[in-house]
Image 1 (cartoon, helix red, strand yellow):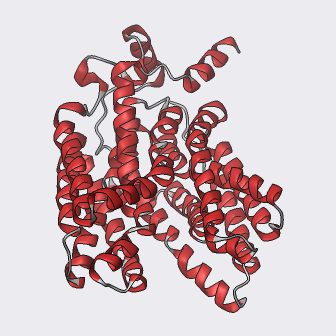
Image 2 (cartoon, one colour; image 1 turned 120 degrees about the horizontal axis):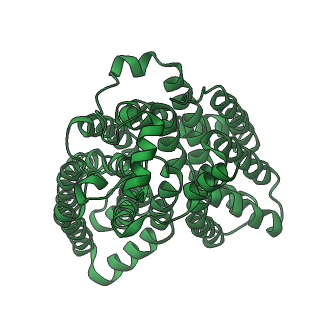
Length: 425
């Protein structure tokens, strides 16, 4: 019992070592750039381009959907490249190309070039969401939950600060200069990555999970595995034939879809019950700030009770959030709703790679993650179609779409509970 208690504590502490913390901060930056360029920026970019070049902002927003699909394809391709190639080089190349494309994007006075460069940005930025969890699972195969809990803080940091910060940059520096400044910043991080990123802890004389050499050797012996493993030892065919692959993909895809559906229409929902747009935006900002400690919370809970139980609790938290949104009629309920929505924002990017690592281990993570995250992402984008259809059927009432999302949330939790945990060696 005492030994199990010590293990539980070690899986939830944050003693990562200086090099470990360095990789966590890097992964945090990757999540920040990914969220800023692929999701959060769409709250600002269409209006900014419309003001600068006279484009129709609604048309620009519509182009975000095909660009997102291109991003999903890009993510899959980069995930496959990560199986055979250096994580460091993938991140360097994708950061530099993304930064250059972003600089050029701000100069697009032509709608065709706008769409093409938006797709380029989404395509290469999608690699960030695979580089980050790959680094975390390579460095922290046992402490993946708490490491991802810290790293995924980058995504809510983007939600909380990127839109407002880039708005200030637009106002102070001007439209084209703002895009060039941010693009150059991404390029600089890409160049620094060449010296900063270390694919595995062994390359700098450390062991996974910041373990001491004696503890690492004993862990490897007890687990029946050597620390460095062949990432291609599990074939793509094996991954596709494994029931857990589909259970993880569908289960988390449904939960991710619910998260996107709730957040994407949060401001219109608040306005429908009488709040002004600035007030609704304030509530969403508060939720984003709550998501920052929320990311750490899900990582801690993952390490404490396991990924599957933590995921079921995550699904329950969003059922509560949806019920609050259905019956939201006073400030107290709204504040409680912000807490639950914020907690959820910080969890999904943590739980998906953690579950993949739990089931497939270090040797199969990259193969499985390339499939699981791609399928889950395809399910995620259905949120917009479901929301639009339900709102049309219900005449603008949010009760129907939120009820549908509650059903989807429950279904996702049931699917996740069917996952069979990896057997001990």
